[in-house]
Structure formats: C-alpha cells, structure tokens
Image (tube, rainbow over all chains, first blue to last red; front, side, top):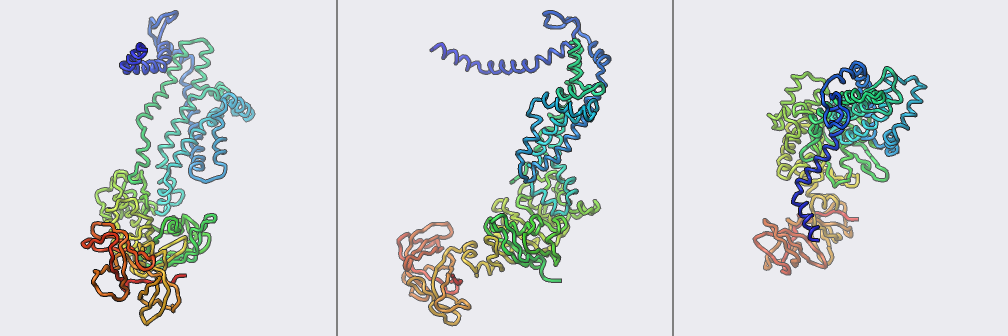
Length: 278
Length: 357
C-alpha cells in the first residue's frame, strides 16, 4: 500500500518528465515513418539491420524524375486537383447558400445525401463511378478523374461553405439592399468578400483531398492521367523501394507548402465579424 | 405635392395565426420624425420591414412620396437605414462603408470621397476614414451607420432601435444628436423603439402600437398627457388607475364616484351620468398635505402602506377609501413611515379620464 502510494507520488513528482516522454513518443510515432522514407530516398546500399544508410545519394530522385516520369505525373495531379477544386467550389457556393441561408423542407435529408459519398467505403463508390465513367468514356481524361474526385471533394466544400453562409449577418445583407445594391452588386461587393475566408478554406481542403485521393483515381485513371499517389503505388508494385521513397517525399512537398500557407493565413475570424457590442 | 411622405394604407401581415400588422393605416408627414413605439411583438418592426421592402404585406399598399412602392424591390426604394446591430460592412473601411451607397450608384470616386467626408463631418467622425468597423466603439460604429444612411440624402431615414445596443449615457447623447441632425436636414424619419423615454424625447409624433394595431398617434405631449387607452397610459409609465362612474357633469368638470369617494375631474366630451370611466393620476402629481391643512376638493384621508427611499424622492404606496391604493411620489425631506396617516389631494386638472367599457 505504502509502496503504491510512493510510486504514485513518484509519478506525480516526475509528471513533467512523464509528459514530455509521452509527447516525444507521440511525435516519433507520427514522424518516424516519414523519417524512414526520407532517409531511404537518399540512402545507398542500405540493407540488413543497419540503422543508418552507409552512403548518401540523390540518384533515386533522378531515377524517379527520369524513369518514373514525375514531372508529367505532377502536372496531371495538379491539373486534376485544380479542376476538381474549381468544380467543387462552384457547387459548394450554390449548395452552401441553399443550406446556409434558405429555409427548405427536407434540408437534413438533402445534407445526408450530399455526405453519402463520404460515408460509404470509397472502393464501393469508386467501382460504381468506374462503371459509369467507362460507359461515358470519361475514364483516362482529366475531367473524368477530376469529376470522380468531386464526388468526395464537393461534400467538404458544401459543409465548409454552408457554415460560412450561415455565419453571414442577415442585417448586413439587408443594409446592402437598403443602400441600393441589387442582387448581383450585393453578391460581388458584400457577400463575396465576406465569404472569401470560407472559400479559401474550402479550396485548400478540396485541393488537398484531390491531391491525396487514391481509390477513386485508381479506378478511373489511364496512361495519360497517372497521378502521384497512383504512380507511387505502382512503383511499390515494381519493387523499387528507394525510388518509391523518393516519389513519396516529392509528393509531400506541396502538402507542406499548403500547410505553411494555412499557418500564415489562419485566423479567418479577423476578416469576418469581431464586432463590438454585437 | 402632398403633405404625406409615407403612407401605410390598410396594411396587414400575418404569420400563420399570428397577426403582426392588423389593418395598419398611418400617414407620416414630410420632414416629420415619427416614432413607432410599442413592446416587442407589437408589429413595429414588421411595419418598418414592410417599408424597406423586406417583407411584403399580405394586404394593403404602402406609398412613399406619393408613389406606390408595395411591389418595388428594396434597392430601388431610395431609403437610408440605421440598424440596431449597426450592420456595417466588416470588410470595408469607414470611408468605404459610408461611400457604399454612392459606389452602388456609380458616382465618380472623387465625388464619393467628398460626400463621404461631408457625411462623416455631419456625425462628427472625421479622422476615422481609414479605420475598420471592428476598431471603433459601439457609439462610433452607430455614427458610421448614420453617416452611411444619410450620405446620399435619401427621402426617408429609417432607424430600427439604433440606440439599444449602446450604454445608457451614450444613448442619451445620441438621442439629441439624432434629433438635431434630422431636424437640420429636414429629412423624414421613422424611428422604431420600445423605449418610451426615447420616443418622447425624439419625436414630432409618436404612434403607439399594440398587437399589430395602432393604439394612439399623437405628439409626445398628447401621448403623455392625454392617453386614450389604458394600454397607452400604462406603456408610457402611468401607474395609478381609478375605476369609477360619472355622477354628474357640470360644465367643464364632472363628478365621479370611485367606491365610496367622490372626485372632481375635467369633463369628458360625449359622456353623461352613469358612464363608467377610468381615471389616471401620475404618482408625481398627487399632493401630500400636512395633517392640519383644511379639507377641500379631491382631498382624502389615506394611510402609508409602504415607503421606499429613492434618494431624490420618496415612493409611497398609500391606501384610502375602500381598498383603493395609489402610488405617490413625495418629498424626500419629509419622510412618512408605514402606518402613518396622511392627507392627499388629487389636483382636478391632473385627473385624466377616459371612458371604460
């Protein structure tokens, strides 16, 4: 009993150390796989039970670019991402307005249907999409792959923009009307600037999602529309682990750039609201 | 050119079984400051929103400057409006907020800047042009709102409880500022509030609303001194009601029996003996007499039931006659304690009577 108490006390006294240890473990847990990949992408002759590669090289990156055709693949990925983001954002703005500002019957049901592609297993959904797209000859086109992505990206956009529109102050819109603005002018001079943070957030979400999307791409891509995740996966199949690692590292770079952008921008509430006395 | 700037003609608006405006007919004259006064849910906001075009009335027509605007969309009605929550554009600077109605009307930029500066001078807010609304205090934000509403000299200025988000001291300051501005510009203004003190201090005329209907329309003096219904009397702060019956009418005055007491009050037109009436007397208009003063017209023996010290005055609840009670404001110098006998006089001209059903 006394021992147990002493033990607990010891833990309590050392709680800072304990806390940091846990934090460190967690960090390692998240970072370790990435470190592994990064190391392997520059290591040469790294076999067996060595902890560190004996030699460093950038050869794998050259291989990835030349053999893996990464520039082309990156171009595909970005184009598809941009198309998917554009379509999702436009859908999101219209649907978000309806969900956020209009009273309509069956709103919850409609929202559930919108979210359905996100709820069911992607492979199930992807199989259906693939069948339809083969029939429509949309497979292996930028638009086709992007459209497949839209089915999972648009729900994000709709969710984010619904919340944005809901947060718009009705009275501010009324003020614009009274000031003489018709619907079009009101949209461009008042609504659009006010929902801009929401649109940006939604675009970042959808682009990242399309960029990372694997399952839906796998069933709709073709020789001309290979994307980074699929290319990396194919390289795994070919058995070149080092090249695969190099591709994986290349794939992460844009994600990090976007993360940095989010960190910089952040605090969208500084743009909207923050009124005194309201 | 008619004298009427705004006219509600038999306007009704229902929400399901709730009647927000019940056959509302009201004319607001050119250059007048009219207040719609009433408790929340009385339909004053609905009436205002019918005027802005945000709500379309179920029945009736609305005219602004002689033109039927019932079917004219909000943005073509040429109104200026000040909102309770200010409703400034958070993404625009003060200058651009005030210049917004001008930008919408495609005025050239230099003219816009000049007019915005003029409007800001009008509300004494020079030097804040480059600030954003969130950097201003509540009072300053509302001045921006006022400048934005006035900048293009609209025919009509609407004010929707503009002061209720401000603290008490600022409220009184702004009250006089708004009144002064509206008078100086000679603009027609409709002011919506639930604060009767605000309404009396600001308005040329007050329209008191209750359950979607107009209870009484008149100058602040008329509303305050000659309320036409119990609701109006209660709403503007009258708290003493005596129910009685006319006994005799004698020229300009009449005798009324209240319980076992007889009162003299100014005569009520178109009434005769037997008519049931309601008498109002304000707590501060009842006189408390010394115990040795002679009896006379409307002088009664009473007893102090409750006494509350209010600093500059005393607030008494007095009982007299058969179960009658009055609130009376007395001099703080002369304190009466509960149970003390007292003599009170209800000055004849201060007894305001209306017919009761």
